[in-house]
Length: 386
Ligand SMILES: Cc1cc2nc3c(=O)[nH]c(=O)nc-3n(C[C@H](O)[C@H](O)[C@H](O)COP(=O)(O)OP(=O)(O)OC[C@H]3O[C@@H](n4cnc5c(N)ncnc54)[C@H](O)[C@@H]3O)c2cc1C
Image 1 (cartoon, rainbow, N blue to C red):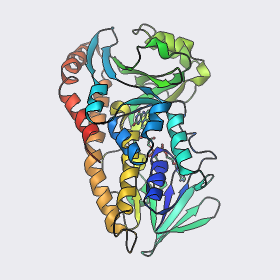
Image 2 (cartoon, helix red, strand yellow):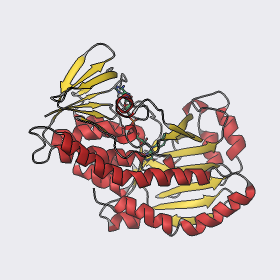
Image 3 (cartoon, helix red, strand yellow):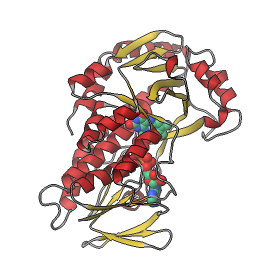
Image 4 (cartoon, rainbow, N blue to C red):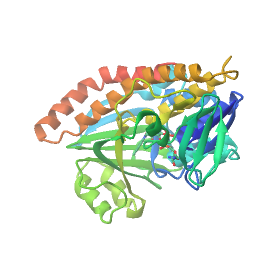
């Protein structure tokens, strides 16, 4: 079976490794000159579900090696009051896994290396495809054509494959921009193993170590008049907004050169009941983009890739029409990801609250809810076997 994977991000590279391990002939087509350049600079929390999926590919130990352990996720108010915490390390151990903070560049590098690089075709932007029932023909911007038995759209938030399957509607803006970077030499500013998430009026910060002495920091701002990117004065603006937040956020912003701070507007899409057709399917953000509030988007892209490999490589899929296997894969992934997309958006909308009364109410709510219901929801998300 020849599988064409469009997009060399976290999901596409994972799918490649999983499909190849399952015996398929796979090729990845990535529009960028160099895979892994997108969003480099960001940090990434791999939860036990992502770790166990990576384990199926033999990559969990290397991810642990490259990153820094996360043992405890803490929730704070911007006024310096701890609201709640999750013993994520203990939960992970009960599941036979771990939590790790890792640089996005390191995670992509690890996946890219695992592909052997030879089958990732860069400078390959898909513009069109045709499924004639016997196979799929992919057409690229430079006029090249490729033929395969299956086409997987792993082409992210503004997926061309998705637009051909489900129509041209774009993703929905959540109303927030995430300003972020990895700060060198800053790991000691938080106790080892701590991830700290702090909530303020229409704003939030996320901090955790990612290995190599670096700290990932992100400042989330709702309702900003900017679309992110790298506008001049962004560091001063962040210091104005977060300068009186609890340590170490002000110090982290202060020590980071402005050119290393990038603003990313965050989008999602309403879940759909079906996303594939014929010999074509989707995975990752092309299928189910979600807000960053449960930090599961990438973890789910990894799960997608691993499950697709397992199912397409399974008995019977190699011979004949792969469409039923693709529909079965989608049904399982839609059931799994729909509550995560919805939950992430719900939390995002709560985090947009900015007036003082609502902020106090939210703090009170989070100090109770985050230690109970949300913890059990997140536990379910990370504990469910793939
Ligand atoms: C600010 C921010 C922070 C985040 N933090 C976390 C986190 O902590 N944990 C977590 O689990 N998730 C996190 N996420 C979500 C995570 O980044 C995404 O869910 C994940 O990157 C999705 O992977 P993907 O492979 O589906 O898409 P992408 O990573 O977007 O990759 C898509 C690839 O397809 C390529 N492509 C696009 N169009 C074409 C085309 N026409 N032809 C060929 N190639 C094409 C792109 O160049 C890209 O390389 C975060 C997201 C953001 C925005």
